[in-house]
Length: 366
Image (cartoon, rainbow, N blue to C red; front, side, top):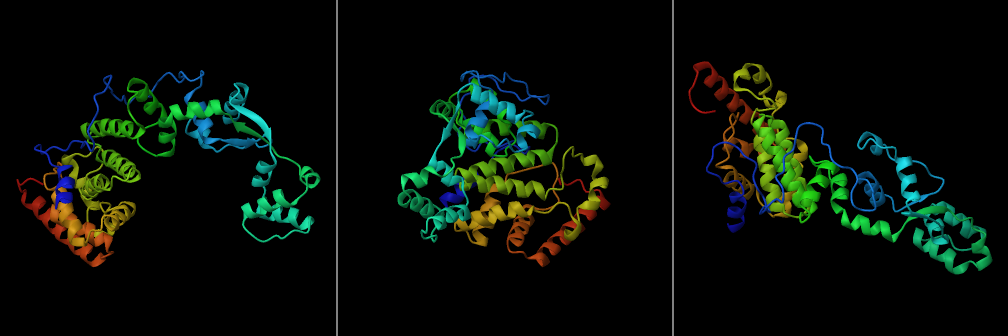
């Protein structure tokens, strides 16, 4: 019961208007932080040897690279608008990558078939895993035979680069985690609030964006901020917080609201509310899968999960909703269990209620 109370408290509030929830104690910001809808402009040079944010990211992602390999993934251009070849060349020029030839590195770069070919050439056993093949070559070939293997030349990251990477974990974190926050926004926040960890930065900035989405009635975008936070909390193994956030996502997905939502235009939206088979307001399979896994992780029965959902969401209010809270809980359980017949019946009941309300002009709150 204490676990249920803990989770329910995450969403308990007096107000009837939705606001982003704080899921961890918030630190006092060193500076007032606002996120402008205009293009985010910051000083791209930072106090780490005059490196740009993109250069630090490249140091983190590329430990070593063949000198004759000039391939780079496309994200450097479409996500960061930089020429990766020039970026890498600059890092070499600044001394962060050094040329190196190593027999071990050469063997590690070879395929299993290539390693076996070397062993066959010297009448040695070719069975075993890749590391066993490498060890056999190093241990059983004489020095002259080892010297005959053509070495691959690579650029290898030096210790100075590693120090810079350690000081800029937030840049790597926001590249690898597809949150609502760019590496530039995160770095700007970190400069103003150096005591914040990457996860704390994510929580703060995502919640700031969430507030803006609510003000603009962009419920779809607000919903996406909850998903981003939930994914972070799952990685941090804060499963109770993640589950609370995913409950919120479910409630929003079933609400009937979308971006730029306006109650005056329900007649436009309502064609896509019902029935279940044609509705665009169903639970996303990815969200259901997350909750299904958390249900197993937290050892919850269907009854436990439903009780937890209702305890968490009982004070949660939005301007409009197609379903009662009880119905949204039952929809979640039915989706987890792939119970399509139950889902059809719930949507059928909600449809009847919705159009009766519309027909008779009920003054009751949605």
